[in-house]
Image (cartoon, rainbow, N blue to C red; front, side):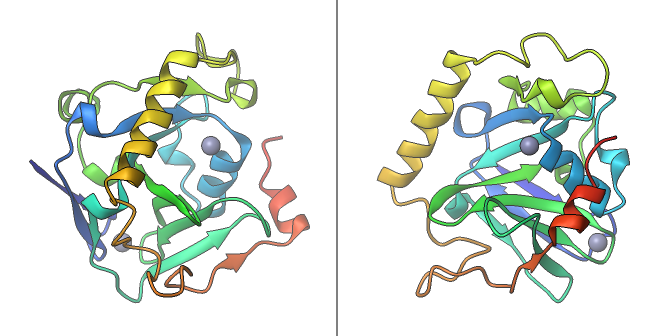
Length: 196
Ligand SMILES: [Zn+2]
Ligand SMILES: [Zn+2]
């Protein structure tokens, strides 16, 4: 099972190998950072009506991205996630953390409609960080969801134990550093992107 991914314009492409509902973790994240990232890219259109980002977490070794000049790395501040995007069409590609074996792909990369995504990757396992949602938070999104959380931790541990953290499409194995120098937003730049 190989699922192709692509930025909107088709310049940055790749695929995920062995992606089935049991091997990925699909969550909708309403956090202010994910919203800020979409806003920074001018891609509010990729947020759902509550401001959620549909994210599919996969093992780095199962993901291939044919990196080219359009690939960029952004950090909303000096700490936290390394967020990757295709600069050609400002498409969010993946969220990563240094040293943690996962890539959170934006679901739009699969080019599937809602039904197709559910069929290929399963429906979202959880809706999280609902306190930042626009309007009324979606059901369950503001509470700690132990079942989905345990599932995610189990998947991540399995990826680590099976050595699926490498090769990583966005990090250099020998140095552990990102393959692009991150663009780090200043505090005022980041604050300007916060939901009002
Ligand atoms: Zn593109
Ligand atoms: Zn988020």
